[in-house]
Amino acid sequence: MVTITPLGRGFGAEVTGADAGLELDAAAFGRIEQAWFDHSILVFRDLSMTPDQQIAFTRRLGPLHIMVPLQYNLDGHPEIFVVGNAEEGGKAVGMRRAGFGFHSDGEDKAIPNAGSFLYAVQVPPEGGDTIFADMYAAWDTLPASTKRKLVGRRARFSRIEMHHVHYPHLPALTEEQKRDRPDVWHPVARRHPRSGRTALYVGRWAVEIEGMPKDEGQQLIAELCAHAQRPAFLHRHRWRPGDAVLWDNRCTQHCATDFDQERYVRRMHRTTLEGEVPLLAQAA
Image (cartoon, rainbow, N blue to C red; front, side):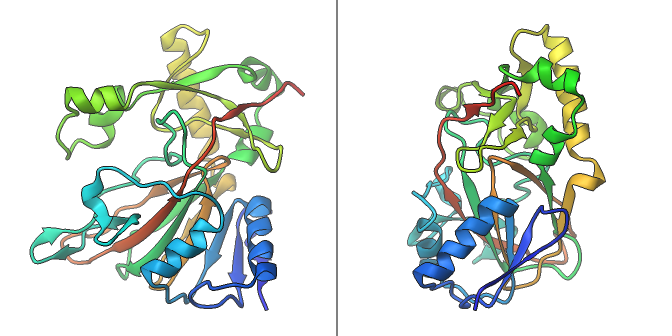
């Protein structure tokens, strides 16, 4: 029987009693889906999923997103994005140093990703954790005056301006890549389409706030990000092989942590859900 056990504060829960390949009947799947909306992140332990099983489970939550660049997708299973420093035949099979800095997946896209499901194939004995931030709590605890300032405003998210900051080890964006990833504007106060709750929606790609001088907006973004990363809002997941975490990008952020990449191998398989146009929250 599937059991949902909160991790604390209502943010995050652990799922136990599920089939190791997540081949679930309708009732068990329904419990897990509702728990995802209730707790924002779900932790699974001791799974043994094939790529097909991971894809099938994630697809029950919604349409799947194919990540680019395609070179980091699993051979024969383009729905699975490989993250980490694993190599085969001397060639990298995953994207190294992905996910550093607090963010939500796809925040710099016109249609951000709704959710992500990350499965641990191989993990180091130390380091390589993932930290999650509760963006509902981050919004709820803002001063009323700050909320009034933010409701109805959007932030500009820019891959072009921030690529060299977050990925200094990768080549600069080509002109074609810049055309493919233009700047986008999303609500800073974002309403979740299922829960109806408001989440703070800023991250590492945000560079400006609508209707504010750029310097003032950048300063406010920095303050909001620091607020969202307060320890009271965070959950650190220490990975074991066979773990998986399902998170909701509409109301959480996450950040990868480093490990000794010369000594250890970390290989993670991620399926990603298509999203929807972010909704503006309304004034309370």
